Length: 251
Length: 207
Image 1 (spheres, one colour):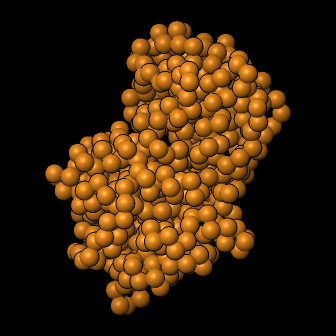
Image 2 (cartoon, each protein chain N blue to C red):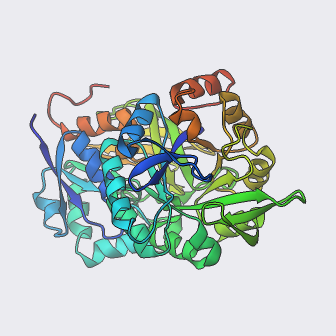
Image 3 (cartoon, chains in turn yellow, cyan):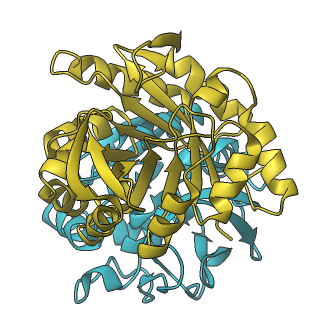
């Protein structure tokens, strides 16, 4: 049986992992390759690396970061941030990414999802969606690291992304991100119901119970950053807890 | 430490960085080959595969790999086929109807049933059938939408389950074909690569 995944996320800027990405005060928490291998030893099932700067100048740097992280990892690596073309994706894959996540560029030009999926396969194409509560029981897609709201309805966008060829959805609740209030379970439940591809829940995890709740709501994988960076808990402890609650995880 | 030379088939679309990094961690020194003569010359050959069946097979055909690869695998020479690389060994795939594979065996890859998540992305338990030299039980990392649901005759198989039992890996002679990615399957995957790299040596069968 396919196990559920626990995925630490490294938000990177200029080759360093930072914390508090969607908020003003960014704090340096360490080297991406060192943190990635540390989480791998804790039992992480995968690493997600999101480059939040990803300006034109930072591009070459980004590939170097991916290369350094890859050398030490024997688990899958998903990379996102600033992917706007097939060429951007190819550069990250050549550097050692196993999957590429698109976010803002896809919301602006959805055809990039079709193109990535045709070129590299659905299993390689992750649609990253940042969703914010619209105050009417639904969610809107927000792009550019949570700065720019769009007219897109999040659940419809998730469905469209999969129809276009995305093989996985990385779903972040902007309302919960950094709040420690737990994942947005309604959002997770609805997204997991409308698509047949795996859904990774993100945003708001502060305890092992939150991971359990998101998996119960239908998520195939759970992602967290700050919780692990702070050392409040380890991937191993989270997986131990999930296992004790009857969730199948790789031990 | 002695590094084991291993040749990786350059399939064009496939991302080779993870495979090469994995092989290095397992103690190998990978070299990428574009010339199909490597299928005859190389002591150990890796056939990776990421992408879709039809363009992958087309690429192998254009570059002249099809016959040399088939001969090598039929002779049981040390070959490691990964993910789509394993599906190339069969006769066909539902992913690209009408496109023949290397046809080392007749069975074709079929899509997972609709009631489970497709693609299958993540770690799945592997259980072992009889007669395996390299494989042992553990968790393997998969990223696939198609798989074999039956083992071809004459091959030893390991199994996983995702909406029903499917072939996790096949072995015959020194050929190891994995539907999962050993290079992304943690210490368990590295151990498997080590055993295959040591084919014929003392490390074989040390599950």
